[in-house]
Length: 293
Image (cartoon, rainbow, N blue to C red; front, side, top):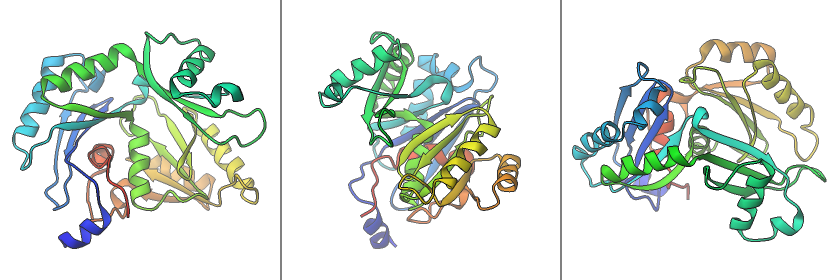
């Protein structure tokens, strides 16, 4: 069994996965040998949920220290997923002369176009291939600088190095990629089962596509993508990765009969990793550096 797993996973050192959610914080330690450990701390009574606990630096770091103290191997790094309320994912159109410059220049230009100040946010900008002339060619992913500073203080107090900070949905899409679900012509929809106000995200193959809080708009955008399936930017296969919203999944399948609904706990992740829907993002974060051979 170990030899089989090592053929799938490679280049991975232990990473603690920390999913900060609206209803609490889920921590995961996933390793090659099936000794997977989870802990969910209910913070729904706190103002701001899991992000409210993040503001209590000592309580947050104590939670992490208690968890890693009983881990079978030493863990020195962590990957953290922020909820929708703490992150911003925005499309930006950068001039060609800016897009060809360094990431620092592109990042500052993206902030300027979104009327954001560098001292207020921390993030990255990613270049993407334009679908048509004049369409967005960059994706800005950012969080408030104050929230990132709180996170850095909390993990440092726990003796951890912050290896990655990402929106929760990017973590789930990483897990879908490991299960070989995210092919180029595949459209995948996600919803956050912890969110107090639903947020839906769409990915076209490996790339982020759009987000909306309106279910009707989600359906219309999926239909537009499917209708364009004969074009180079279309998607023939549609999957709703159900992360605990069974009623929404059934409604989406009713509106789009060709859509396939897959539970997060049913993903065929190499190594037969099993988890509950609310553990998916934390598992993905613990496997952030895992790649398929």
